Image (cartoon, rainbow, N blue to C red; front, side, top):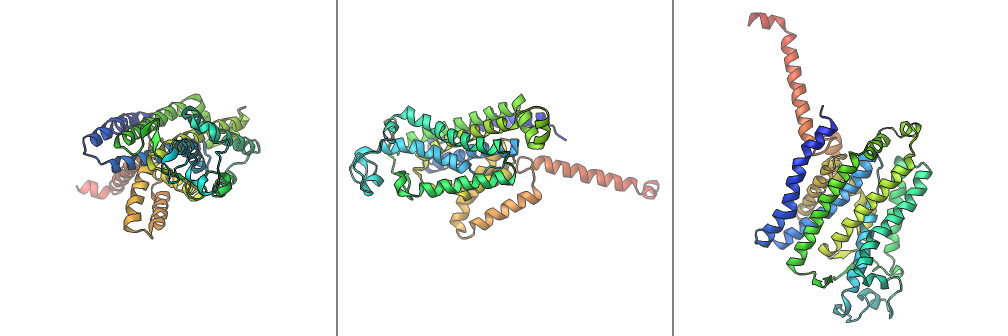
Length: 375
């Protein structure tokens, strides 16, 4: 059986090839007109989802925490950066007012005080990480100190996501209500609707994804990663060894929330909208399917799963719009039953099956000595 170290070495060439392809090749093909602006923008969305899937894998695949609130952190990152983009619209909005259009529609005449700092780009970027990180720290501290784990932790994270989505649907929160934020125009003075700006945003997304993969790869192969996997396999043994598992789980929970938030911040200017529907519980459940399909505990697998499922979704919602959820559920059932290691583990699974059948065939020949003598 292949050891984890060998598996990591096998993946390294694929990571380098993927980095070159996504960061260099695809933008060049787009600049030469061989890939449309729509396709590049769509792949930018896929890569954002891939980054969020890595954050889930860091919790579920390496720490054993089935978290159902990563869509919340993803959306919070998008909202924090979206606030800055909304303020940059200025008088270009539908109401020709300095206030965001939804505030004018609701009858507001003055910008709320908590919105004003978001005129600053650095402040908005800082809030992308701080707000989700603080929420993750508070929630994680209370949950892990209370030794909540397993299915109870999953239910609590799902409840957190559900409660937050209901809160953001309210107009009196002044975060856009049901419609959220949209109609963005500029970012750092550049027109968001030009192919050049979208290409730069795509490259930033691809670079972030590669950086997150290599960063998580280094983390999971360090001493911290060994303890992380030990917590996944047997938390009680780690506790008896003298380690504070709550602190380890809290740290990785906060880190994963920030990774998801960064993906959400890059998602918003490329897709052009962020609303509460992005943080509903079904979104977090979809991410679990991406990770399971790609192969949890591999880092590269969740990205493959996110790209595959979302590409399938783009096709299925166009060809079979009423059957998409059935297709997604069927894919998840097939993975659980026949592909426990996901797409990444499929070659190894087929190789093991081949060796098993080969050994079985050799054993059947030896078990019939009469045929051997006659031959």
